[in-house]
Image (cartoon, rainbow, N blue to C red; front, top):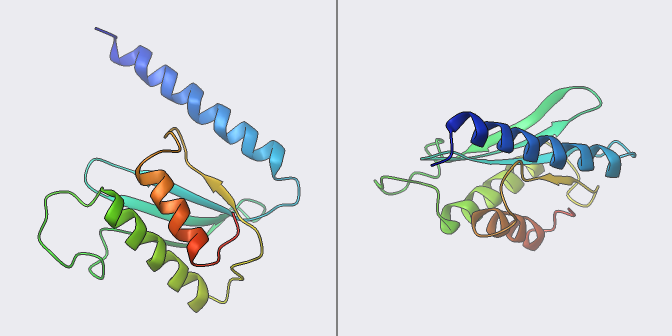
Length: 128
């Protein structure tokens, strides 16, 4: 069985590799959409790396997304709902959807919940 320390080192390397590629590809200073999956909830943020500020955020912890009493809010259905909520908040904050954003998936593979979130953003008109 793999040690926890080794697994944590591997995860840190994956995160660093993804972020390094994002920095290389983001020479224009575009805002970044960060998507995170925890054990029970999903989180999304729009981050301006040039200013070092989070422009807005949303998660499945918000009462608007918790329509039913379920144990975990981390399936594909909730990731698509989270994307629709994020787009609504972006429009309310007067952020341009077609301005071009960088999608930061962290250490997660582009599959399942991450892919569902990104596809729902694209359907709503966000250019990533």
